[in-house]
Length: 126
Image (cartoon, rainbow, N blue to C red):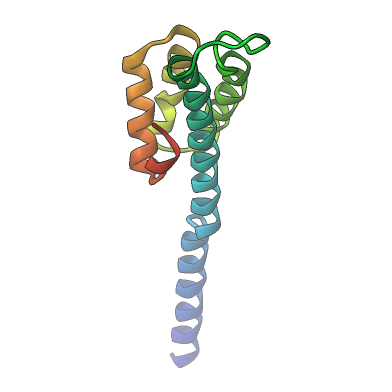
């Protein structure tokens, strides 16, 4: 009887280890890194876009402060987040990002900034 009890305890410990292994902290760290990358790129795009409003245009400078050139990198980060983020916010970030960086949709931009806030990266965005 004692031997069966040990086997059951070992089997239970194995099952618990397997179940907990599926939710490892490295997965959470990876998702956090995707959010940090995305929010950082979004913030850089916002700075470039905002620089146009703050300073007069100078010869040789892009008319949009370089924001147009940064848009594809923000969209690429949103695509990665959409594929790897695994939460409700990351599922709609891609559509909102495209609307914000290519269509000047201020409501969509507000939603992605709020998503960055909820992810803990409020200091990276404006």
